[in-house]
Image (cartoon, rainbow, N blue to C red):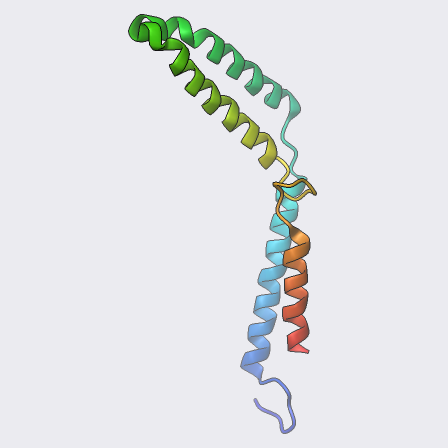
Length: 118
């Protein structure tokens, strides 16, 4: 239904409304990710179990690796503790740390795109 003098046609307006609703849903999804707290006792338990595993595994590995056990354990330690460090960073993805998602950049790009519509 095109009216004479209309700036936006009905299909284009419908597309804008649908895109706006998708943006709204994505925002609340990100908010849910940001506000969901990781249980602190669980984080402590994971850290403790990682330490126990890494420091007890050389006794299991020694019969098969013999003199290469320290080198194998070095690689295993870097892997386990590196994964744990990454998991701690990913607990809060929308902050102001260096590794966090830069929401200001994406927000400014969104504002520029929305200003083009008006």
